[in-house]
Image 1 (cartoon, one colour):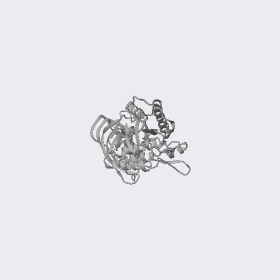
Image 2 (cartoon, rainbow, N blue to C red):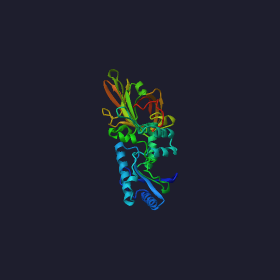
Image 3 (tube, one colour):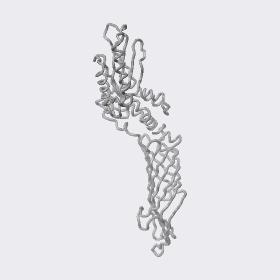
Image 4 (tube, one colour):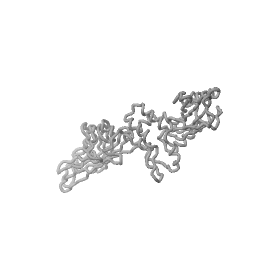
Length: 415
């Protein structure tokens, strides 16, 4: 990708060419992308400058870059190796004095990323540009310990959605690239005094000089390289009212998807009166969240999904009893089962609590048995198969949001 053609800066000119590398690779491959064309352009340009007696090469600057999703040490090593590969390739074909070669530090193309974000239609791009341009790449405390970073701020924007968008749309344009910057000027204006070098203007690397000075103190910041994690614990208050203890957990998967599971267990009996209130089992659901609230934070707002349930029961209240599943068996012995589709809404009520209203409609199947208690025994009356289409799931759940950033006072999009 040609980052810039010859641009006039008084009587100086500059040319930048970006050479691509495969992900995680530092070996220059002329067959990769448009590398052959770009490298030919670099060599031809340098040859034309050297052959022009009215021009003089003042500085040739080589630098490498990587996209920011990798770790500090890996990015630094990749960028340096890519820079060395490009410099070696060019200097094997064109003789360049050591005195005009510079190798600027910096290996994350922050400025280039900011430019791509700025001209895109990415949601909330102003926040991302502000972080890219105004938040220091690394922040240390007075003991030299890393306490904050630009990357961490970007990963937390919109609950990870901003980072995911940039990863998908922009990182391939800023990773795996080394840049050559050539500066020339007309000989007639060269003054008879030592040339004072200016730091070359390289769009891709940015703001990393302080990192080099303290790189030996940086170990890793694992949280920056992982996907933001959100979860919730919950209990269905409808079951609680019916004396059926239950607990559920829900995990946010990203891109407004989540998976949840619930388990209930109520095993109450009063033998003297033949009264039984027994049920246990569970369900699992996959949900897609949507709407304004869902886009502001995970596990909030409207959701639709699919679910599956397995359960067994034994209900008898001084008369005919009904048992779902194999008599004397376990949950897995000819259990009852259900599956369907659900819709719900999770309403924020406090900083850490939501109330989730969910209704599911589907199919309920499995065997069940009718019996009558008689003289301390249970007389089986009939064995039937249930085929029910209709509501099979109802929740009014109290939801506890877990993890520091998973609270209702955090606004923004989600990943």
